[in-house]
Each structure stands twice: as C-alpha cells, then as structure tokens.
Image 1 (cartoon, rainbow, N blue to C red):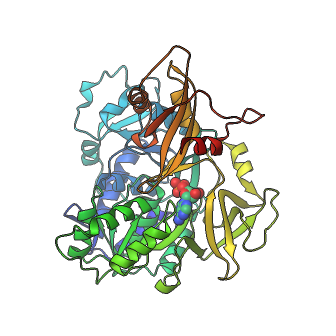
Image 2 (tube, helix red, strand yellow):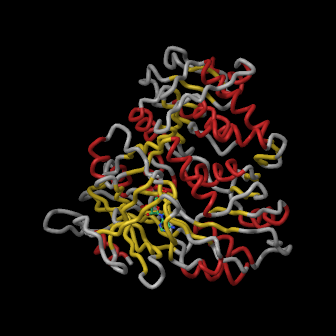
Length: 512
Ligand code: AMP
C-alpha cells in the first residue's frame, strides 16, 4: 500500500480534528489532506510521474509537508534535503539521484546551469523573469502560484506497489560519498505500525515537534507516528528550550521527541524557568539519533520525574530497538529491545554470532530494513549478509536482562554532533582542497553539549600559514555549518600505521 493513501484514510476519520498546529495556525486533517491533494495536482500538472525523484530543499514549514505527502501520493520518490546544504553538496545529490524536479529557494540556483533537464520550482517570491530563461529553461515558477493554478478536485491514484520506493534519504559512507538509502512504502508502514504499538500512540496524543523535517527522526518517526494515530502535532519552527517547556504546559502535550543535545539544553534551562511547568499530561519523552548519557537520563529524571525513553534507529532501517513503555523498565545507556518484526544479532568480524555480553557488530533483519543504496549495487551487497543488514554499530546484549541491547560505539568513523552525522572524509576532502593544507584528519571529540564536536588536525605546506578562523571560514563555503570543524589543530604530522592508514585513536589521544 501507498503510505500517503494509508494516511488519507486516517484523515477521513478525523476530518475536523487539528492534525498540525504550526506556529499558531491550525490545520485540520481535512485541511491538511486538501492541501496535499492540491500539491499532488500541481506535481502531476508539471509532468511528474511515478518513480521520478523530487528533491526538496526548504525550511521547516507546512509547505514542506504538503509537498512530501503529495510526492508520495503520485508514486514519485521524495528526496528531503537539509536546507543548510551548500550548492556543491546539492549538485552531488541532484546528479546522483538524477532528479526530475528540484524545489528550492532562488539562492540555490548557482551552479545548476548544467542541469538542462532538471525542472525547478522556487519557494520564495522571486519572479521567474528575474532569471535568464536560457540559463534555466526548465524554471517552472513559484511554488504557491503553481499550486494555485493546479486543477481543483484532483484525486491522487496512489500508484505504488508494496516495495516501491517512497523516499531516498542521503546518508554517507566512510569513503565520504553520500549514499541514497531507498526506503519503500512498506518499510515505512511496517515501522510506523510497530512504533504505534510499542509507544501506545493514540488519537488523544499531542506531540510537540521541534526536530527538523528533512531527517527520518523528525519526519518518519515523529510526523508519521502522529498522523497515523490521528493525534495532533504542535510543530515549532525552531528549537528554543524555554519555549519547549512553556508549550508542553500550554498545549497539554503528551509526547516529545528529541536528540540528547536538546535534552541537555532542556535540563540546563529548567532552573531558570519563571513559571512552573505543568507536565501532568505528559506521557513520553523519547530520545534517539545519538547516545543519551547516563547523566542526562538521571538529571532529567531528578528534575521532571520522567525517565526518558531511548530508542535506536537509523536512516536505512527506521527504528529497530526501543526501551519499554513501562517507565521502570527503561534503563540509562541501553536502547532496549527489538521492536515487533525486527530481529537483532551481534556478530564478530567473521559474521559469527557472539555470546550474550560480548561486543560485536549489530546486524538487523526485518520488514523495516531498506531496499538498498540508490544505484550502488556494490555498496548494497557489502552492507548485507544473507538478508541481514550490517549496521556498523557496535553493541552487546545483556545476559542478565533478557538480552537488552547496549550500544558501545560506532564501527564506522561517523561523528554525530548534536544528532547530525558528519563523515570525516567529506570534511577532509574540503580541507585538502585548500591551497595551504597538505593533509588533514577529522575526528570527533567528546563534548558535553553536542555529544561529539568536529575537530581537525591539519599539516600545512612548508612556508604557508593560515589562521584557524580562515580555515574554518573556507570550510563554511562548501559545507553545512554543522560539518565544519569547531577547532583546528596545526600539527607537524598526522600519525599513520605501516599501511599508511591514519590512526585516529592516537591522534585523539594527542589532541586531548
Ligand atoms: P541516522 O542514519 O542519521 O539516523 O544515524 C544512525 C546512527 O545513529 C546509528 O547507526 C547509530 O550509530 C546512531 N544512533 C541512533 N540512535 C542511537 C542511540 N539511541 N544511541 C546511540 N547511537 C544511536
């Protein structure tokens, strides 16, 4: 079944109920789905067909959601992109995905002249006449105007089969090249049903939404969970800790989903709250995307009385494992037990199952597991063994507690800073394109607030000098701010092993 069709059925049962309240504006389920259908009519009108890739790079907004579900409704494939991505990054995603349509703001048009077949729709109010039609022959116009012109009473036909792809979400490899994870309608539907059961979602729930929409956490876990349950989402454009505490009280929220960095800021602001926060309606504080520390878990419980429910998932698999709904069964540092329909194994580098308590790679199997990497059959083959997905995360099952899963670290060199993934190679490539930089190594340093912070060691060419600020400013021209190093260490050499491989653990010891 098509996910958008499934959600449209829920919408019929809750027509007049608020589906999403975004910055004070209420969108009932009926309003929401009318808009989704208008956007679907527009997409169909501009020639988007089943299977076409539609890349969307826009700020957190209702329009993003209308578009997302409209893309799914017509059987096309949604490619949500971080609004912070710079044009060089966008060029890669558009080229790799061979997208048919790119919906973005006018400042992103730089460098897109070579995409002669790419249709472009602008979300800002800049008139298309501003741009030279020869350079952008497929600039279709402004999003809201095109939606206004679209045929009324359009009904999508939801032409997707079970395993058809709904989304391509770009993740990265340790080689630095982003990989497009192909996620099917079936993957999303089975995962959302498993979470519905595990977290006991109901139509009485009121979710406070403070996460970005371009990542699976904010979109596939939070928004889908709430819409599938017929619940109400109170969506804020930006995260502000005081506003979160205030909104939880004022809007009688029942569920919050966040990353550990956000919980850290909520803890830090608790003491300074002027009005008392009323959490009497709250049911669940959920955390994921990065490890929640023992201290964050216990501090939060001391202040609020709530034990945060930590869960473990990834772009490729959706959610795998969750702590139990029963509060007393949630344990700090543990991500819990497999969700319904998800199987977990812990294996050694030869793929042999390890005994409980032994640390190995987490392998995952289930209907939630994605369909492979877009046009990367080799990478896809490397990532699977007999139908099991190799997560790249290291963990163990606790023999004293029914095989509860603990994650210990990532096998890959992924850095997670404030819940966002940073792949060292990608940053190293940018640093090494700087004329003064001879070589570089990016590492993640433990950081209380961010989880990990991106730092870099660089070796400069002989006779050259540049300040750390200049190097960081250079990175910011090519990379989203969260990927840029927060600190640069100029070093005489970078430690390597006999095979020439950088020894990052030694580097980390030297720099701390
Ligand atoms: P992403 O694909 O951006 O969702 O990132 C997935 C990665 O985030 C996983 O492979 C884990 O390394 C990490 N991750 C997600 N949830 C947790 C968690 N609760 N604890 C530790 N790491 C996590």
